[in-house]
Amino acid sequence: MNNLNFFRVSFVLLFALVASMLLVTTRANEAEHDHAQHDQAQEATGEFQEGKHYHRISPAVPTDVKAGSVEVLELFWYGCPHCYQFEKYLTRWMQEKAANVEFMRIPAVLNRSWVPHARAYYALEAMGEIERIHPIFFAAIHEQGRRLRDMDSMARFLTQHGIDGKEFKKAYDSLYVETKTKRAKQLVLQYGSSSVPAVIINGKYRSTASDAGSYERLLQLINQLAQQEANLSASSETIE
Image 1 (cartoon, rainbow, N blue to C red):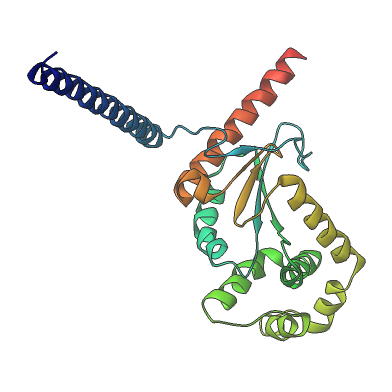
Image 2: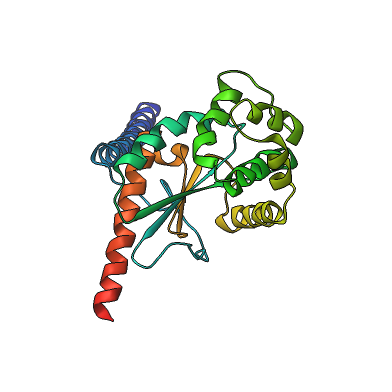
């Protein structure tokens, strides 16, 4: 083979190699684009995927609601700004949720500094004041900059809102609050949660706004999974 033919063959082979590489790259880009479009379409239609938008809890944690009801539980911390932002969405959702959905909160204890707020929550619950004080306590921290970090500072603050400080301290140090706080720690571990706010649907599924895509989509997910659980429960009763 003379030099001219050699260079011609080499050029053809090189051209074929470059063309093949461009074809592979183009197809890879098209596949990635199609995958992205599929994800966008799923988000637009409200579709949710297990393992991406929510996570199965295994083993499932028993719930505390009556038969036929679905438990939706929020894990939160009073010091968390994201939990405070989520409150307005939750408040609206609670007014619109299905009648068979029972909502409850658990003050998460992910480190020692969160314990005082958990004890305060359960102390107010024991006093029958949690529903009234819950939004006031949140706003004091995130809107007024109140540093409510221990029993005494919280007691002083609560006296300004009609709570007997001595009774609050008594409840704060009670066996009831101690038991509930320990149980909250245990449940957070069972749910596999490492951040707040997080929601648990019927002891089976866990999600966050980051997982779902936004607070609004998280509420859509809650409704979807709650309906799924309600349908499953109805089917089981029919079979029986």
